[in-house]
Image (cartoon, rainbow, N blue to C red):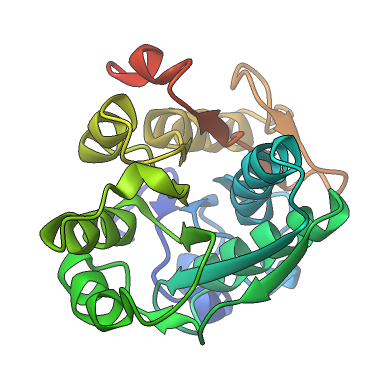
Length: 246
């Protein structure tokens, strides 16, 4: 590692954490953004600063539950736009929103099989367009904003107002926030990249200096003491402007 005092890694494959830990040796190691699947890698010199992907879908589910319960509707047919199949974020985001809808008293039902659009806007357009006018649905749930924007573009190209039925995304990107302001995207979920980045650096310094990993991060840690959680945040038309400089 070239004499590094600490190593910070945004892991692409959560299954490779053990190999990375082995390569780091005794050098303090902090994973950022993605949670390693093997918790045995965590010890006094290894931690992670990330956001709980289960809660990103929960915020979507909360919004949809409030929306449909206000209409007096409990059975909800949804179209799911999946990211990369098998990826941790895809699995947890998809499961989280459905679990929360059920927990809030809705009966979510698939309007069609999930569409694997790989977090890509163009793929969402290609896969969702043929369903327009042929599939009855109440809402569109997307694992990220890019795919949600693809669905919006597909609807708009066919002369359909995308604001007629709620479309929910994740990431609160610049384009996603604008779509919320325009009334096309119902809501998104903000994942704090600056908070994760600064948090990971602070966690690394804490390990080096023998401090509690959450010291001076502004965030909480989990019960194991190895994970610093950077919260997801719901973004709607009511608060979207406050995220423009985040």
